Amino acid sequence: LRRNPGELEFHQAVREVFDSLGRVLDKHPQYVQASILERICEPERQIIFRVPWVDDDGRVRINRGFRVQFNSVLGPYKGGLRFHPTVLLGTVKFLGFEQVFKNALTGMPIGGGKGGSDFDPKGRSEGEIMRFCQSFMTEAYRHIGEYTDVPAGDIGVGAREIGYLFGQYKRITNRYESGVLTGKGVTWGGSLVRTEATGYGAVYFTEHMLATRGRSFDGARVLVSGSGNVAVHAIEKVHALGGRVVGASDSSGAIHDPEGIDLELLRDVKERRRERISVYADERGGRARFLPGASVWDIESDERIDVALPCATQNEISEAQAAGLVASGVVAVAEGANMPTTPGAIRVLRDAGVLFAPGKAANAGGVATSALEMQQNASRDSWGFEHTEERLSEIMAGIHERTAATADEYGVPGDYVVGANIAGFTRVADAMLALGVI
Ligand code: NDP
Image 1 (tube, rainbow, N blue to C red):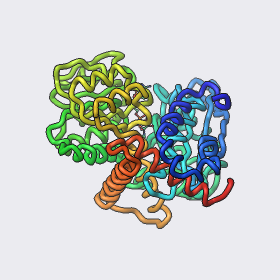
Image 2: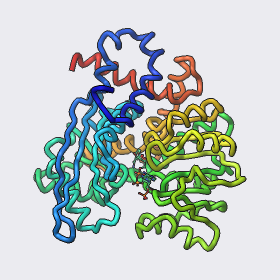
Image 3: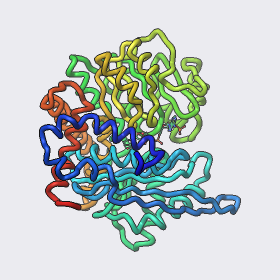
């Protein structure tokens, strides 16, 4: 705590992992001997830089850029870039720390890192976004590379921003190094299914959890927070599996649509027109209501809710909101976002016997498909949609299996938090032991 003052989210993420590790350390004293815990929460490298850019009025603006290269014992650092005004070093460190264990859990050869900026893309023109991305990459390019560090998208960074970042990298280095970034457009080195992967993957993971209780998405009533990349694709997959998503949100408020969200309209409003979510309710012909400033977890209704998929941001479900979900009959909660459930809320859900999937297991489909994108780039190949989705589905089944089996092995069957933390930790810790004191 003294070494990382004020980094509350980072402390929260570290505490959550360490709380699960007592059983492992008892069984494997070699981890203590080699100071693995001390080493694993110290990033290998942290880069902070100035990002100057010129707005449409000719004024010079300054933002702060970050890249935290957390752990590379399993492969090149891998993790997204977040552009959001709330981004601080502690935010990037919490995300990077989570990423290390998530990436290990996929079983693929990728280390963990994360980056971003306190730049706010909202209300910025295309030209401003492009100039910002170019300036960000003008510094970032010297720290990344196919074999070093491979960034991707996260909040505020989608295919458009990855395009501008990749264009600048290519220009500066004079190399068409496809494997330096993932989340690229499919016509220029991207992988099919990458865009859908995190949302789809979270739903696949939830399907496996529900099956342990003889349940499925068929006929399930579902709440999803957010309406960005992860949320939209989670909604799409839930609908494909016969469930009905009755609420979604953005940072301006929530929508409640008891008949089930019209995904085409939502995508038109949020992705194509880049409007606020209230426009969805305005155009839904009286079937949906907008709750200004509210979270989707505040929707009051007599309806049963079977599944909750938080897909917006960290610490979005409070203890009281978790109690509300329990009262409405929720059976499973799976984190599409990173750390959206507060520690108090997790306690409430676990005490009530709700199936709970932490983000490092449930949302690992995105980074796993990024690793598939890297494989395609390395072999100069591109796979079809069905084949890639099949791979994603197998990977999510594998993560579920590994997480559940680890929870069983350590005497806490059905505890996906402990299962995911231990399975991820042991893979990284064993590689750290093998590679010596580095
Ligand atoms: P997007 O930027 O596409 O969407 C984020 C959504 O969450 C938007 O609807 C946004 O609302 C809302 N949101 C963001 N911040 C807040 C906030 N402070 N309060 C309320 N709502 C907020 O991001 P993604 O969908 O890519 O990411 C969502 C989550 O999933 C993040 O936690 C991310 O780390 C995690 N994740 C993403 C992966 C990916 O592949 N993209 C992979 C693994 C995890 P608004 O439109 O108003 O900003």
